[in-house]
Length: 385
View 1 (spheres, rainbow, N blue to C red):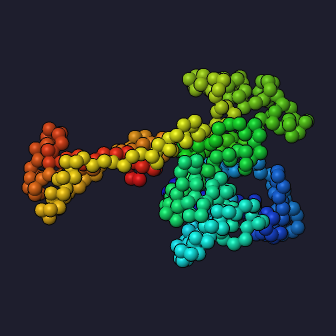
View 2 (spheres, rainbow, N blue to C red; view 1 turned 45 degrees about the horizontal axis):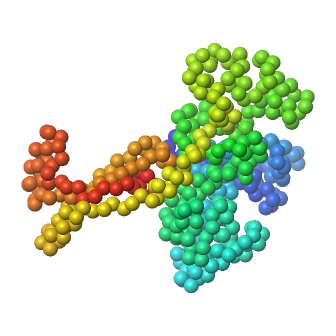
View 3 (cartoon, helix red, strand yellow; view 1 turned 180 degrees about the vertical axis):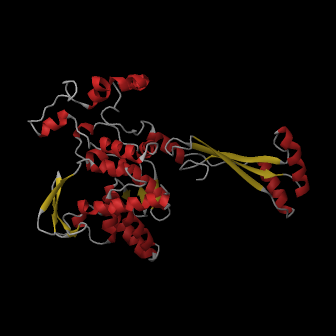
């Protein structure tokens, strides 16, 4: 699937999600051919067709988990609205005077209350920031993390989106779902989980996401909602739980024989994957984030500075080269990168070509290339950051 079609499908899925989020905004919302959305409860939505019949459609109470993992971007409409509000606010603030901008930041920094008390763009911006656990001060600095803050207009939208995704996945279970058993679990690492899900086919990926979001219930879960349901396993008669199906049921013993190493890992007492098969945010994630944005700036060697100054006095150009490398580039959460700045000492192109040919055979660095500075990438890690 191409990137454009992937995002197009994500947009369609988000539009289908709209009636779930706007159920109280209007009593008549179009729902496909000859169907009208009329209401929603905690367990189902109601759709009335053209003949007046009401259809009740059940949906997964943890659908926010599926919307977090199913597409190239978060499909939850609440998250999309927050990012659209940020985009519109940044676009509008770039067109107003500095006095109006300062007034908006001042009002936003002192606003308290919910959306019902929001009057105007400043209070609305403050409300949406608080939805992600952020705050803004009088100068326009938004505090995205315990030790990180950026100006609302100077931070790139790509970086703003990255921090918004991290803020949304934090406390997703406790705020946006009713999976009470998972409230004590670590937060979902969306980037790592989506990267693993991409390795499966579209059909397999869909079944995995349904299982993660609670779409497949065990007999014990059904018994809690319907007392006439048998809580025992349909194959062996033992209590039907997720760990039982995966690790103990005799029906799947032959399959487990080919994956003994994985089964042994899943049987460890501190393994959470049997209950919730996702990648979790690591305990050192916050520390790693701090280190990424605290990397010192590269320091130029004194010899390099003297050389550049002499070239400047002679009015001769200085040829600069940069090179970088990234370790573990497949995962933006754990990768780290470094770079080097090189300048050339060759007086002309002929000397540069000569040493290039000489060192190409021996695989040595030409003496006309000198290292000026080295450093670690600051912020998001990657050779193209």
